[in-house]
Image (tube, rainbow, N blue to C red; front, side, top):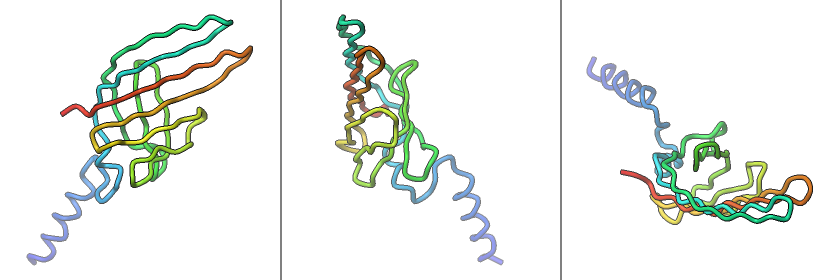
Amino acid sequence: MKHIFFVLFFCLVIFGCKKHPFDYRNKFLGNYKFNVHKYDSEGGITTLDTTIYNGEITYGSDKNTIYITYSKNSHFETSLNEDGQLGMYSKSNIYGKFESTHHIIFRLEWKEMFGNYYIREVTGDRLK
């Protein structure tokens, strides 16, 4: 009887949690303070801007992806290796990695019509 109780309790703990147990992505998820440097070139005019945003990193749609919301209307999904390297899952060119389980750096680049291009250089620290 004790064994049945233990098994039921274990199942409740494992399947009742928001986080997926034993998932390597867990150590990278959470709320982050992002420092976003924007470089935009539209119609030959370049603008620079820096913003700070409290965003989050959550599970992605696949078992090896994460979803990063780094500013109010800016987010993307990307693959994540166990060593913290970001992949090319998104439509933009992304280069980045987790330097630790609490600090991320990445760079997004994309081009649009008429030679317009956009760059986002972002650093983020997990909030406690």
